Length: 455
Image (cartoon, rainbow, N blue to C red):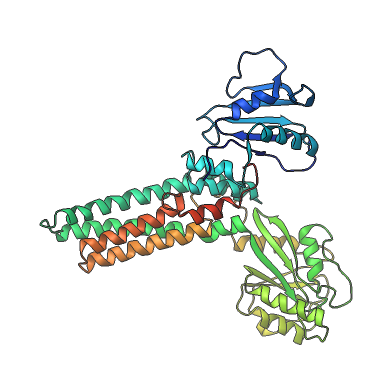
């Protein structure tokens, strides 16, 4: 990793805006800032962490923009290097020219995530905290932002470091018996190690059990709206979104593909998917839409199966029910404002909510039911608790728990200290992947390329 060059990038999104920020990091940051920035006040030198008013100028003295500038000397900066920021007007021409001047002065355009990568490499944050920066930026609900903020502040890292320290203590005791083989591990020592490892594995497993809640907050729930054509699926989606996003007509088969939109429901981020009506059709375009709808069922966290409560359930309704037989299903009985027809037994077994998308009756109840199934209104969840929300973290922690389980089995099975030590080394390596101590370069590259330029 090239850490010798001073890097530069816009820290704000491209396009038009009231304010744009250009960020520098590296040994030459202060010199490059002084080269193009002229403070309004007559000052001897730039103080660290103080905002100055002035102008960015070309080499011959012409003004590029009126700006504010700040220098943050190491180690009290995001990267633990000298960092400088120029706060200019957010137009693309001005931003581009300031970047050009800094590159002409010797800076290099930063790669995606390179500022945060330097913060990681310089020891300001660990890998789990670095990943939390992306999650905080991408959070789509208050609860998701709380989880990301807690991870960024080191809550997950502290838990993992605690696991590693206790595992290292076990390893030190086992390796002592490798170094001094004449001193056999006594049965009492086996019992004490096994008890400690059991308690540690239990704590790992409790953290693993939080993954589903954390995943929902991080990725959002995939909620699929399914049913026969012209039953009110698109109308239901529009009502839940609060806007006319899906086309609604009385003509069956209007929706021929999946339509996906995002919303936050009682604190839960949702990915709401409207699908083509399930029926047998000779229209190749509509048939492809039906096939895609069935494929989406497998990855859905919840299927809202919509039926018309004012009409007898037909073959197409049964076809839709068959399509989601292996999924979590909530039956939505539409047209609840009209006289109702009794449902057949196969549908009565499903949890259900009666609504009217036309009048809005029952919609609030539907929203509460969906949110309640997945712990909605958890706006403060993650602020005080440690949640596992990243699949990479889950896989690594699961391997650590499994390796610790093998170690425990080896203790009771009288395995040699060398094999016991190997199990503990594998546990440490798996835990280290989460915080970055043992993460291979390809994992680092994959993580930091998810960042935007300038972060």
